[in-house]
Length: 389
Image (cartoon, rainbow, N blue to C red; front, top):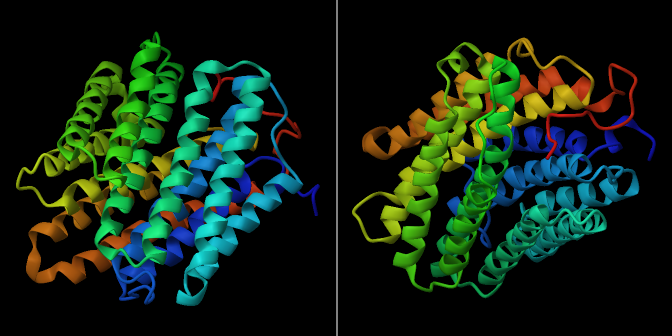
């Protein structure tokens, strides 16, 4: 079993299981599932989308990128089986109020073991400029722990803080990873010079949301957290303008990344205004990030990295995936529209959930065979270029 292709690199089980679970969980939420007595209503939904769905893809991506950053062999076999088992147990036990504690413990262990293993590889090759990613992954697990402590202590008035902190840190991962790969992918595909990013800009894309998340989870200097969110959002928009080339609009594998990055930046600015007490609905910022940013960039990055790392052509986009990208953008617009159209709120949520699920379903249908089979080019190692730095 340890030698099966699915256990050779982290993106394989993480992308596949996360996408399948994303379909199930978003449809449950869209059609009336209200969580458990321990995690009622949107607390369950947000927890599963932030630390469940997005968390798995972040770990899968980082543990696929780290071998490229270090030149070391990827963590695989028993290590990946352990990580996947922890994630699956956390997903299953969260459906029962009596086992919510187990879900929290397994979820925290999932992130901390992944962060420790990543840091080991980075330290072995003294890849110091990437230490921040492993540290942020540890903090992501810490936020998950604090959130579950709030649940255990029944501090329901603090749960929203925990969720927003987790979501904002996810936006930091989006900023960090996007700053590393979007200009590179753009230059390679369009055959143009790559727009250079100063290392401090890349660091700031993660560090600003990380600091904001810590202030929010501990309810300290909330207006400052708002300023940090706005700064991160403005930085994201400036970066998009710097990287933008009109030719991307003819290439779905590029425009989806730009769209997701842009929507994340807008969401951060909206949440920044919220924490600075401007009259803006928190749901607007949340869903620009959660659906547009997380949804758009996960389906875009999974499509690209999984194709390359299974030895298949990245361009043109695999059949059906451009439709998946459009569906995810539509899901974003409908979900944000639900805040405006009060009378049809639940219908808008249901439609957005279906669009989100259909987008992921196209990915699963197309990629499940690739993720569970050996590379098409019969190679066993990592690919060069796409995640290097």
